[in-house]
Image (cartoon, rainbow, N blue to C red):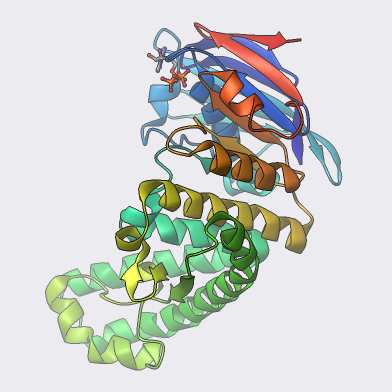
Length: 360
Ligand SMILES: Nc1ncnc2c1ncn2[C@@H]1O[C@H](COP(=O)(O)OP(=O)(O)OP(=O)(O)O)[C@@H](O)[C@H]1O
């Protein structure tokens, strides 16, 4: 999967740009504030229907405009496709795939799998479990077609259960919902578990190259004690849940645990090493998707040089290019990237005040 053409209109400071990227590594360079990250963000927006920088989607619309438009011509394993998205300031969003209106935004993610590596990416290891759950669920979503609906159902039932708890409902009322919850929670958990197992296999090799002297263990925690039956747990924790008005355990508390010996990775590794670990996780995800679904992800790598030494920059670019995926890398100084590559970038773009030009 790659972008053969990308048109951007009214996205942050980019009023109009048309790029014809290559299937290999595309280097985007320019000064601070020129609009490099906005190009990556626009690709992400097209694949996810939201930004990786701001929770408020209207912020990405150019301040003087009412809507933004993105269009991409995609080269997929199954042939070509045209994907278009228009987002209005009032929140409305129109998405079209080959001219047909798309109702579910999950279709975007199915069509355009994206991996992002930014200087902030290592917060994946620092923040609460939500970001790590999203990481697992990206893979679970792509690796098993039944995951999405099972997770949507789990969340719906959890919401209803929590409302009943807040209403002070009796356990017999709640038990009715628990049966459904247990069914979907087990489905979600089994897909997540299987996904992390498969990911671990690939991850070992990549981590071995990036951090050869560190023994990192990655494991999945389901959100409740794996030796305990979930239905029984929901029953025994009913009074606790009732007083908090929330379901205390379940798949909504799942996490990915990363350790070096007995220490959490964030206490055992340097900032640079943590970044490499996050890169390894993202590369492994992309590789697994390729193995399982014969689909390439697009890699968006923002400000690659930051905090990586020349040797690790080289190693990372080598691993990325070896995936065979389309890659977009931004940098202020293109030399730092070009010097770290075994062969020249497939294409270079220069960005200045939101204007994008191809560098021949
Ligand atoms: N909604 C908006 N409308 C117009 N301009 C915007 C909007 N949001 C951000 N900008 C501007 O767009 C510019 C592009 O920012 P962007 O983060 O893409 O630059 P960058 O080249 O990646 O910079 P850096 O190297 O500092 O990360 C900034 O100057 C910013 O002030």
